[in-house]
Length: 74
Image (cartoon, rainbow, N blue to C red; front, side):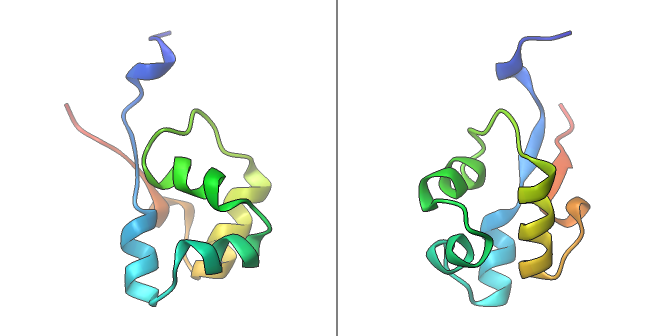
């Protein structure tokens, strides 16, 4: 398995928030996750995400996990 820092997962949280006119702070309050943790996810520095957090984000943004995450081609 490749080292963790070589993952190719891209997070599209910034785009989804902009499309919905929502701030990171508003989303954090709605999903009960800290702004810092969502910022780590948004900036692509997260190493993992709980399914419960992913479910809550998708519920609040009215999206599917595939709208939030994708694999970047190298």
